[in-house]
Image (cartoon, rainbow, N blue to C red):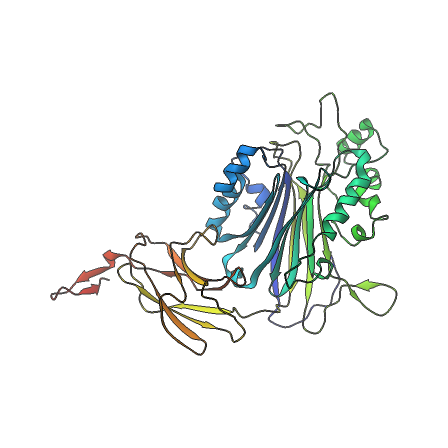
Length: 454
């Protein structure tokens, strides 16, 4: 399903990124044992580059929040355990009480993803309590501005005006004062998802359930509050959504696929949604469209928009959207090029050469980390070195430092080097995978000197 109809450039530098977006109100539940379907791990037709995961109603008790401050929360740890063996790295996260937003990417994209800002906007209890509201990660992706928002809006059928008010407030609060970041409405892409709590108007419980049972959704779509609200709210109108070809995702009895059988018997609704907005550029005439300029091309296609009915730990079913993002990179060369020099062994300090692009501003607080392939996040290093501390030589654009590998455990795993910029708060260079040879690789000659053993 094409989100925008553009004439595609023919340059070989064009890139396509596959993005998988997850939204799920987990109702304070712990992770289940298997999330393969949710993450599409068994779909061999997908070659995903980025995972964006938004959860609502995380366990936000005092003890849980204190524990999560000192340690990774169980959901973040679960996703890292599952995705890191597939070469996905957690590049950013933000949490506000029950809201959690995570971004994972394949390691080859790290030098082209710059995390600009994270932001929380509470809207509960007169704007002071974070049980409702939104969290945002603002980043630069191959030179394009992208904002990702996970939200939880007010519940109940009669509170639609309040939902729209909170939607507008979250959007208007995404001003990044003190950062050289344009207004969010000027970003190339906004991905907005979460438990938006929009309900189905007018129809009674029996009619809604019978329509779901017979898979006749068209009448229910007409009375969906989100669809109706687009005619009233100019900001919401700018966001697009795929067709709702799955049953309403709320409200279920836990550990079942039965809609609410409690005394309240809440009416089913599509509360869990994924929206997107591409930057609109003015053109001649009375309307606007998404058109690339001569130096850029940025287009989003929705491949699938589905619910996952097999999961029953919550009264909500998770919803996922899989997108193809086609773009012409505005940034195609890493700011740092890293090269491990010579034969790396676990017996000596090893030499690293790196070159800088002319426009890169280095800092004494920049560092280079040594990682095993399959790292979970950027702090998951085996060893590291401050670039100025162990500097051996430097010249115009070329520098050399050494790093201690004597404490690296013997393993047959492959390793990576990553350069972290403190100014940009992001990885700006990554090496190709390589091996560090163990002690057993070397024997001794007759003079007692170490020699490679083949």
